[in-house]
Length: 95
Length: 493
Image (cartoon, rainbow over all chains, first blue to last red; front, side):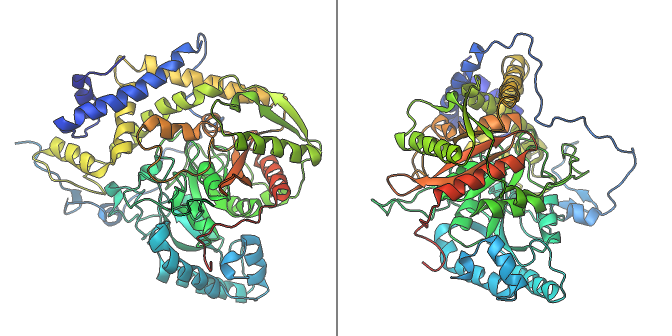
């Protein structure tokens, strides 16, 4: 399944990474190289095999559904690139 | 002997006997860092003042008879571990301004046990790479040199390249690393030191910048197997803040180093004999089998039939998880922000400016394999092959106690080599990735030198949560190899 330039642009949009027009051809070549190499997995017979989501051989731990953390907005906002009071600030979203 | 040459075990004894102080030990390392780091670039951030404060506190604790396992031991911390009040970059422009308001569980445990943090070690950007060449803070120089052509600058491996180079050059006594597909073991092999990726779940991932959460696992790098055992004991243990943390007691890893291998069955998987592997690595592997046989182990020919599919499976699973994990870098809550006309433009420009080429490639691959219409063909299929890779190990561990394989298919290569094709770089991890996919422990131990005088490692792979056998076998190989060669760039040289 070779990627065409339109698909490369679509993936970049989904990933929210701006890609300039002059970068598309190089990216297309690199991504197709990697995807072509990955195709060898089609040789493997996976009929009836249950997918493995992770390496932790354990049941997920449960805890009480109570608030155990929070209440320190200054610490949370300390790394914000822009803020307005106790809020993160972003460019205007709604006109 | 210089203070920087001591092992952690020797330094513990010296500190307790008051042969030297923690302050002297920290200063010796900080001076060596001042001399060597401008060249090696092993540290992104050096915490001189903080390290000296910690060293003085260590001396006070020792004087009061309250020394703990690592009191006064100077370490490098991979710059992927969040350290409270100390900038944590993950080797990326994206996190260049990020100062965590909290301490990762692993580093908090090391501090609890009295360790001194010298600084934050360089790494491939977001731990994605096998050469440390993808760091936004510049490449790291491997302190080892080829006998011929000693001018060539070699890579330390990656992604924990700064950690490995710092320990090899004796500008840290030990270091933390993280291993997703080989990022502790491959740099340990390239830099002639020991490093263990414990079982997935042994060390908490809480506060470690996430790359691929089903694979990421912290672990130590040090100059001896025993030192790795000392560090891992402190780093390990149950953490309710990591839902995949194993609620199991932490064994006495240091004692396991003295167990010997008598009566152990050691498997040698035939699938690791790959085309194009240098003869020297094949020969070293055979030498390792002989050492273990001489020490009373039985060598058993075994098969892990899906080995060759480990790498392509990894390059679906890891990018998929990375594309999801790295979605958080949006220029709004922390890290870099690039200005944009609207919010979406801000996201796209921030992520274009903040991520390097390899990280961007992996996010795009991950986004594609998870996208509608391709999920089943790529991601779901990869998860099924991953189940088969795990089954390979589960089956083989009914026959043997541990496996012996090479760590990497080559010695350290030069900066600029393997850079033209991403897949060539990925092949470096062919021998480390299967254990990562299965979540089982793997350790690289220096076992010999190649004809260029560069270190080569052997890897011991163990059963889940049986790091003790891994340490026992690794210590035996270390004893048998008896390597005395030192890297040419090192403190005091």
